[in-house]
Image (cartoon, rainbow, N blue to C red; front, side, top):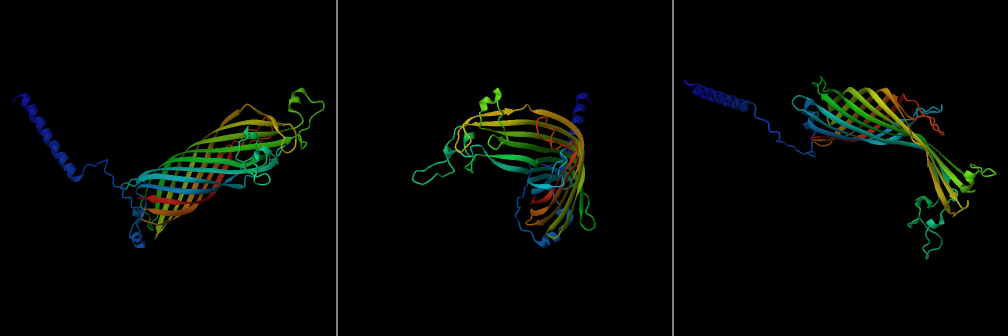
Length: 402
């Protein structure tokens, strides 16, 4: 037999063996179609107590895609400042949101989950309302002719707009603020989860390990209003040449501000425990995280001076001066530790939808900078670079699992 015929015979035999093996494999393990997708979006299909009683805990747990949304009402602790009068045990409320999107493989009981949490606030300030030196711009009020007197609020244009009355007040006012507790919080989590076999009484434990990127921004502001009318500005005699242009009727609004940014990069571990009873689902989450906190604070001052042609109602604004200092930056790094505890009770409304309520406690136990640096210009006291922040409160939301 020639080499050519032997080679052709060998190739034919291998092709037949391959086809037989492929046929056997397809008979026992059909090939998966990556585009086959049966969403079954019957989220509102009714469910009965009997349906739930007949389902094992492993079948009631989330499988495939699942999503949750919760509205947060969390109270945040105040910063520790260097003035010796900090009230860090006081809590101020802020509102936020928590979103979670995950996928749990149905056959092997492990998957991934992404969680985003944000808290807008608190926004607690000590505010004093001060009338400005001319206290009213009469040109910013309308006289409709047919009606007696002057009425408002106006819709006409005042140029420049800063010379007009405060919208909604029909007066010229300054709101002088001293911050008590102003902050916002954002957190991004990506976790790998595993689902263990249910315990004897139906509880399910899900360990997790993942990564958290959190940002906590703190805002600190101190403001002051002075004018020649209330005696807080005293014009010397003789008047210095640099002050002659201001005349005898003017006011200043001073603002000293610091913004402190905390960027936390941390690894985390934890678990979620779930237990089903009739239509109710009890769940508890615990996560502890640790990593580095990259801190950056910037501070500046700004002074707005308004010069008038008198100190009574309706006196005109001659001109305004705005002076802003150079922005100062300061950076630091700290080792940070924190934990996140959640507890929830959910009620099964339909086959795929639950409503739930609970609580959440986030404790950034170490490594947080609040209050910014000590101001070299005026009144900011600054804060410790290694503080803690506690955020605790209630949650209410929905859970969806198709």
